[in-house]
Length: 234
Image 1 (tube, rainbow, N blue to C red):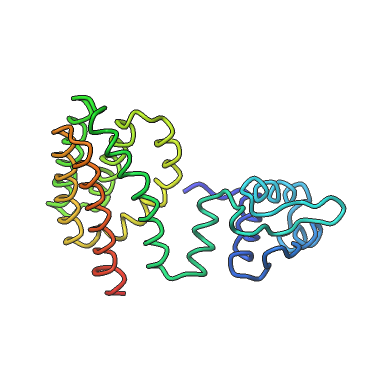
Image 2: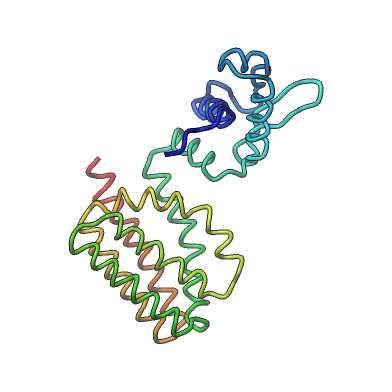
């Protein structure tokens, strides 16, 4: 794993303090000199760290006054929002909100893909579903998750809407981490295979409404599995 740069270390520490509430919303951050002394880094490094947080919408600079924390609604970094959401809400609440977002994106993508998919798209979906089955057979969670994510990516691309893939991309890394956690449960793997099979069959028929319903069913099953096997067990 690549070592974090000093800029990333400082930015991450400041974000962590904001997430924990040590630095509140609309509260001023320590001065560049204070942050530099605390981390034993130059002011240039601190400025670059502040620029990182500005680019994420986490902080704003008020001329002549200093840097202040923005309300979370103004943050533009998915990772930052997930961190603060995870700190202020239960893991189940965060999981449910992520599924709500997925449902909005993916049911629409399935609806569009049903009439726009190509034979090559269907072949790719079948390959990824076979890879999920193969991963499940030997309980290779990493292979299972990779194939699962790839299956959904094909549908997003097959929708023919260039904005869907771009808008959904930031969620992919988050989903990969969470899929790895949930897919360790064998029953969840089995349910996911069945749901993906239903989606593929609907897409193969070219039935847009059935494809939308199949994806919606998958979201319902995913949420039920998380409640039953992950959070109830925890």
